[in-house]
Length: 165
Image 1 (cartoon, helix red, strand yellow):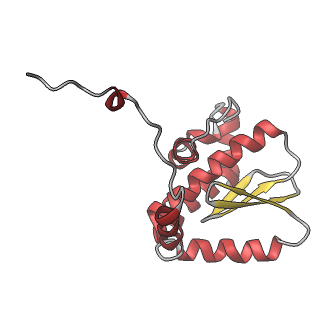
Image 2 (cartoon, one colour):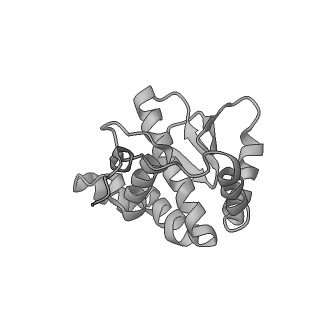
């Protein structure tokens, strides 16, 4: 006689985001501050310098600091810095995207700068890249590391981005 399948086995559960609680959370921060130490030290220094008089919030396992200006966001390990004063939809999507970079740091550690940080900075700020994107109507998020950050940000935060990114 064949075994009857349990209804529970057919239920698809969403993936738990990294470091949800307890031991997982401990391992998340331990890994970030060992394997990802160089990125997180720079992030911590930037956080300490910008701490006073700024709005801060926790997002998943990161700390977001809002800074005025005309720019987007940057993730330095668990420390995320975002432009203050943008609309809520942009803020929501950017949190998820930047959290994706936080998870990339968890995976890549000391190689984060080489694989993510430098290519992302060049793609964002280097005038020929900016000109190319505008001229050819190419999304900033089409670069491999930005697309990857969007994907992992959604997966590990368990939130969906809007149509902005």
